[in-house]
Amino acid sequence: MIFSQKTLKKRIFLALATLPFFGVVAAFGIDPITVTENIEQETFVESLALPEALPTDSGTFDFWREERIERGETLSSLLKKLGVNTEERQAFIDAAHRSNSIGQLIPGRSVLARVTSGGSLLLMRYLVSDTTLVTVDRANESFEVTEQTIQPDIRQVMRSASIQNSLFGATDAADVPDKIASEMADAFSGDIDFHRDLRQGDQFSVVYEAFYFDGRLIKTGRLLAAEFINQGTPYQAIYFQDPEGRAGYYNSQGQSLKRAFLKSPMPFDRISSGFSAARLHPVLKIWRSHKGIDYAAPTGTPVRAVADSTVSFAGRKGGYGNLIVLTHQNPYSTAYGHLSRYAKGIKQGARIGQGQIIGYVGATGVATGPHLHYEFRVNGQQYNPLALRLPTAYPLDSRYRAQFASLAQPLATKLNLLRNTNLSKLD
Image 1 (cartoon, one colour):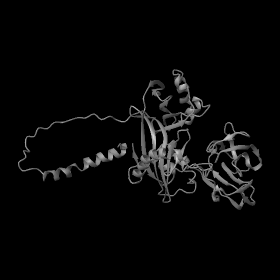
Image 2 (tube, rainbow, N blue to C red):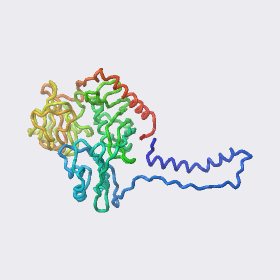
Image 3 (cartoon, one colour):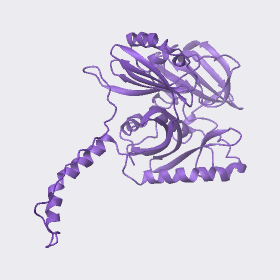
Image 4 (cartoon, helix red, strand yellow):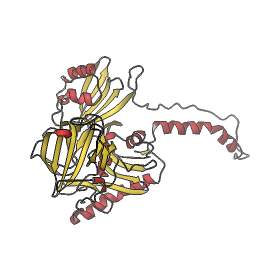
C-alpha cells in the first residue's frame, strides 16, 4: 500500500509527536532486574529517496497533463493541447529533429507532460511502442531527447472520493487523471445524467491501469472498473473484451451499460434552457415553444453523437446556424445546432459511431452566446429526451459469461474495498 506524500508526512508527524507519551508508558514496563545504565548507543543514518524534483518558473506552479494523439495531429498542435506556449513549442520542435521517434505521432497513443502554469515544458514522456520510451527533459533553455528500450510495469491503481462541488473537482482532489474521469462518465452516461443528477455527497471508486518505469508514471491505461453511488443508488461498470474483440462496460450481472442512446451529447455542461411548450425567446423577444434542450458551454467544446447513426444533413440552416442531423435506427433522429464547426469527415451519408465527436459548440444562427441546441426526434417530431424511455443495448453473449465472471469478481471485490474505506487512493 502506498500513501500519498501528504498522508505520509502526517503519519510521521503524529508518530514523532507521540514519542514522549509512549516513552512514559514504557518506563512502567521495565523489568526490575533490567540494566539501564551504560547502555551503548549507536546512531544510524538512512538515506531516503526523494521524489523527482524539477525546476519551476518563479511565481508559477506546474501540473501533469496527458493528451491522446488524434489522427492527423502535428507536434505543434499536440504541444498546444498540452498547454505549452508558442516560444517553448518552437524550441521543442527544434530539439525533436534529433529523434526519429518523437516525430512519429501514432494516433491512439498518449503523451504525458509536466507543464508550468506559464506554459513552460519541464518534462515529456511518450511511449512510442509497448517497449520504446522517448523522454524529453529540460536542460536550461533547451531540451534533451533520450530514447530507450523498456519493459513497463503495469499496475492497477485504486481511487475513491465523494462529490463536493463537481465531478472533475472531486477527481482532481483524488488524483484521478482526466482521461479516467471521462471514461467513467462515458461508462455511466446511459444511467446518470451528469448535468442534472449529481448531488453533493455522491461517491465514486475507480480501478484503472497505469504504466510505470523506474517508479515513474509514463502512461495512464484503461479504466478497468468503476462504481458511482448517485443519490444513494450504486452503479457498477466493469470492462470486458470478448474473444471476438467486442469490448465494453458491463454491470456485475453481465448486462451491457452501453445504451442505444446516450442521455446527453455533452458529458459535463449545464442546461441553460430546457424543453418547453412556451418560453420567451432571448433574441426574438417573443413567446414560442422550445422543442429542444440548450447546453451552455464554451466555444469549441466537443459535441458527440448520442447513438450509432448516419449523417442526413450537415450545413447551414436558418436560426439553427451550423446544423448536423443524424438518422438512427427507425424512427429516431437527432439534431445539433449553433455549431462553430464540424468535425473532420462529417458529411451527408457518413456513418457515425456512438460517442464520436461530430462538431464543436458555437453561437452560429440565432443565438445570444455559445451553446448547443439539441433536439431528439421521433418520426420527425421533437420530443423531450429526458422524459422518454429509450431502447437499451443487448446483454453479454451467453458464451462468454463464465469468462466475464472470473474477470469481474476480483475487480468487484476491489470496488467493495474502496466503498468501505476512508482512503482516497491505493496503488
